[in-house]
Image 1 (cartoon, rainbow, N blue to C red):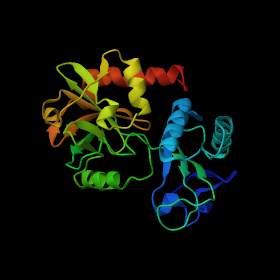
Image 2: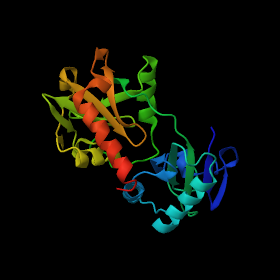
Image 3: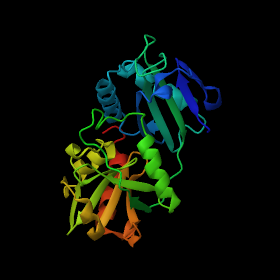
Image 4: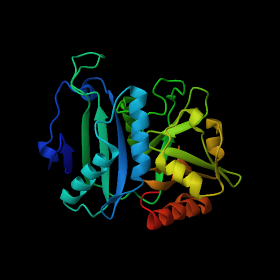
Amino acid sequence: MTGTVWIDGAIVDAAEAKVSVFDHGLTVGDGVFETIKVIGGRPFALRRHIERLHRSARGLGLDVPLSDARLRAAIDELLTAAPGGSDLGRLRITVTGGVAPPGSGRGTAGPTLIIAVAPLEPWEVDTVAITVPWPRNERSAVTGLKTTSYAENVVALAEARKVGATEAIMPNLAGSLCEGTGTNVFVVRDGALSTPPLLAGCLAGVTRALLLEELPEADEDNVPMAALPDADEVLLTSSTRDVQPLRMLDGRELPGIDGPVAKRAIDAVAELQARDLDP
């Protein structure tokens, strides 16, 4: 991996960045994170990402060990120091439970905070996805928290990559659409654009929220997984993909970038990014 890292108040090359082998984020996945798109040297929608970082941390009983002002300053320092910092990038903030004895209990060392930035390769304009049978638990204690415990996502995404797809879409326990491994999902049915409500168990995606605000026709609604084979269009949203329509789902062709709703959604997010980098 190439990139630049802020850790323990110092900026180092990614190859030199180190955390303890007893860090709770490593041993038990006890941590939260945010991934933020960098556009022209500035992080997009940083306020919203920091707010969600705090929500996730509170949900795990963690504290973010910097004030918001100092966190923003550290991000600015990192982006200034990073080679090509003004280019398209992926910024990640990670907060873990810190060094602790082996096992689930936390230690007394306090949380670990890591901020890293690396180049971001642009996604294709549209993509391929599959559905997988493994459900999200919408009643879990960590539902809606952006935690570092991503093993389920790793397994599902590996299944997608076996067939040349870039995303796996999952149901919830009720059999309704939930989310992808790293995306929210919007579905067009009979001209109506909808995405599952947060009660369905999906993450409160930043791009999801922005699209709901920017596109009047978008709303929240439960979508049965059984309705996906008849969808007119399917769109993925995330902080790095922005809006990426599907050209194929489970082997069925979809309009992809040529879908009329997809075009409006892509334009809406692009116009927002052009006028306001911290909406």
